[in-house]
Image (cartoon, rainbow, N blue to C red; front, side, top):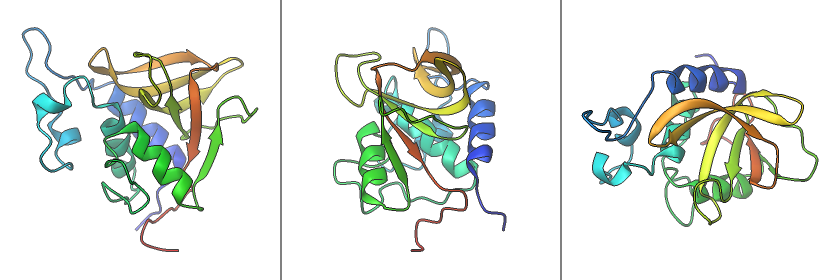
Length: 174
């Protein structure tokens, strides 16, 4: 079996963002079932407008990263929550975690955590880096106004951190 890579993650996230996935919209039923399905007891209605982290998890799985929905490092919630991604990254020494503003240069396939993008709170959004530009990043994201898409965002104070899952990462191995 081929090992998962960050490049695969970026390619999958870009393709999935362009489907596009969407929650309940005027005249349309949600198509988030594949994103919500791995998380037991979470319904499409509960996920509506709250699925950005679940989208990243779905993309990781589709790219071949085998990560449980709630790794042991996650104390607050499962990986359908942005804060869980930070707990996972800071709790597993194999995963690189870089705070925003440290001068870190993100690469294709890194995961980006945001603060205060949509709400005035920490850990409010997450996406997958598709491309790094001079002062911006191009990301694939779920739940941009309840739809998936590709968006260019400034590299600024809204970036909480970058997470770099190493190529070939397997959760159950040390």
